[in-house]
Length: 324
Image (cartoon, rainbow, N blue to C red; front, side, top):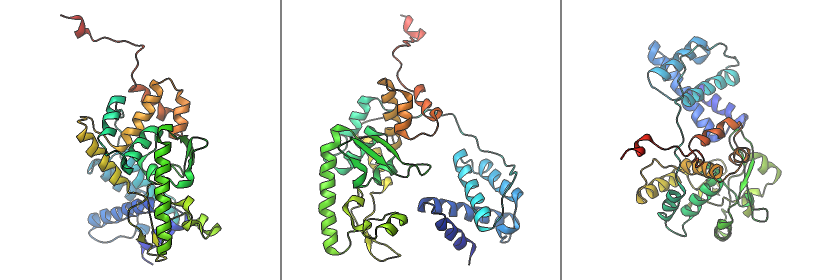
């Protein structure tokens, strides 16, 4: 079996997310390509060691100028390769590390958020998603992957499944979106019934769930709230699956809305998450509460929003304003 086939099989045996498998495979290919260019011939990673991994990571930091998080991602992929495919543990990798720049998040004012939302067609699914991201602090991928059973209207909360670190969390369900979300679910239910009559009313579900409940993929509760407009065939089973709306489509809609609204800041879907956290802190909510809603492991991560929030109590006035 070829190395990359072995690597992909190992990823699936350990239940890595498809996106993680894709990214890790990319870095293994880059690692092999780098050393082939260096040596002028193909060298199997089993014949390479810590010094060769360090040379590759240093190349990424110095010659390609990648971010710290990207370099860490590449390192994680190679550690996985050596530990789970080649049966070795890498020790003492001495590489030049990329540096993380100290940057503050971009935050919209509440007026800018309103202008952004108004720039999206009323009644559209995209507008509901944008308002939901701002009103809950959801990441765009989390919003796209919401399922019908994740919305608890009675408790006024949303269950966010398998977030970063493979942990679930609960966030608030905005009262102003309840009726529109119920309308969206009614649309999903009607489309799901049409799909079932055509013989392909399925949604992709975790393997563990499908083993316990063979009919789970065909149940309404496991359908995506914001599903794709097109059902696509599963290459493994052949049955048609209706996946979730693609995050890139939503992010593009946010950028277009920002341009239409005349916002001069760099606005992405993640800007809505930053704005959610900052506005909660400005409204007097405890930072631990905001940490829980965002799903941050450490409160220090949440603390960054205290640097961009409006602090009316300080009242610092520029010395320039004393002149004239």
